Amino acid sequence: MRSAELKPEITNLAKADLSSHSSIRPPHSALLVFEQVSKWYGQVLGLNQVTLELRGGITGLVGSNGAGKSTLMKLATGQIRPTLGRVTVAGVDAWHWEARRLVGYCPDVDAFYEDMTGREFVRTMADLCGYPSAESKRRTEATLDRVGMSDRADRKLRGYSKGMRQRIKLAQALLTDPSLLVLDEPLSGIDPVGRQELLDLFRSLAAQGMGLLVSSHELEELEKLTNHVAIMARGRVAAVGTLQKIREMLEDFPLSVRIDVERPKDVAKLLLSLDEVTGVDVAGDTVTVRAHSPKTFFRDFGRLVVRERLDVRRLEPLDDSAHAILGYLLGGSGKT
Image (cartoon, rainbow, N blue to C red; front, side, top):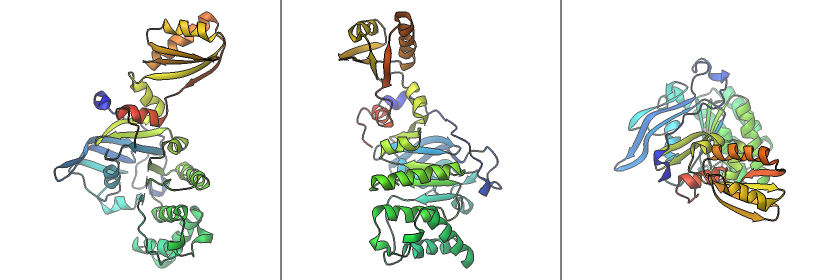
């Protein structure tokens, strides 16, 4: 597997001042930390020596089925304990009850009391958090308003659409005003309008200082939300950081670039003179070039443009998406 030689890079994401828990989390400290964490399920290794550090903002979590995403999220939310290593949230052991108040969790599966209304369900979750009656009611109404469900919260859950159910799950996850919000497939089954509304809500929460860890198979939608990703493969973190940073780390990842230019055939001949170029296709005024070593290619191509005074109308990388990068790390499958 190509990722075997790739050393995970711990990239500090955008720092946030989580003032609601400032007494627990020191300023500028890490929000979520995995320190050489492994998790065994009997004879099966679910997570293998994972080291990870997130400091806020929105981070996408991607990987194929069985890569370890669910195990990582369960460890982050204190549902399970690591076999080896340590997981902390704002410096608190993730298994400790204090950490539970710092984390909100929106699971993938639906598990509701279907005869309850949305308001009754969220209020019950608030009561179970131990809030006094008045505070429980206040938080229920505040979170329902936050997710846009105040005017629909008195309908029975069994009659809710997939998007409405997702919003109710999100409401209960926000009850404690968490520092870290863990979202498992929050966009699954949501219509385009609902997706955009949720994406806007996630950005708003991040802007207010909340850290979000979002696991999703919807890579195109995830790229609209953030370019910070943690890519998992076979129980390990293959890479962490911005897509551009990860892309630069993959020197052997074949680069494809579309170039719209005058004299495309002449330009194709010039491109083939570059050592890092492995192939060129010409169609109309468009040249599609394949190369390795992205940094070297763009440096040499820039010099070529200046020397030959090329009239470049368009320059577009074709394989810098999360889907393409993930497919490369997973051996070309691209399946998540």
